[in-house]
Length: 125
Image (cartoon, rainbow, N blue to C red):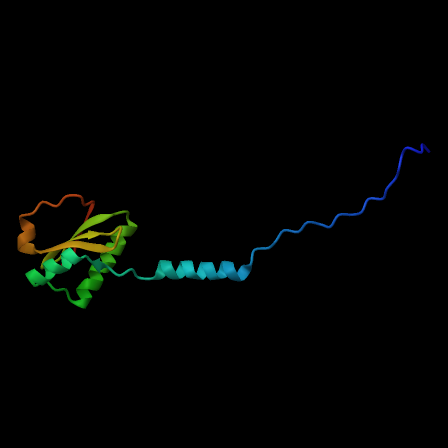
C-alpha cells in the first residue's frame, strides 16, 4: 500500500429530521378562523346616518334591523360593495364592504332622489 494514502473511517452523520408543526397552534388558529367566519358582523350606523335618522324620526324595530343586516350580509357574499336598501318606511345607502350605513332617508324623500355609486339594491317590505 502506498504510504501517501491514508484511510479514515467515516463517521455516520445524524439523520436530519423535519421539525413537525406544532399541532396545538394550528388547531388554535383554525378555531379562531372558524369563529371569525361564523361571527355575525353587526351593521354600524355612521354619524351622518344617525343624525338623519334622529332629525327625520326614522326608527327600525329589532326584527327589521336584523333582516337588514342579514340581507346586507347576503349581498356582500354575492360581491356587492355598496347597496341601496329600500324598506317600507325608509331607504338606506349601505357600504356592505365596511358594514356601515352611510345615509338614511324616508321613502317620500327617496322617491325624488337619484342614487349613484351603488352596485346592488335590496328591497325589504
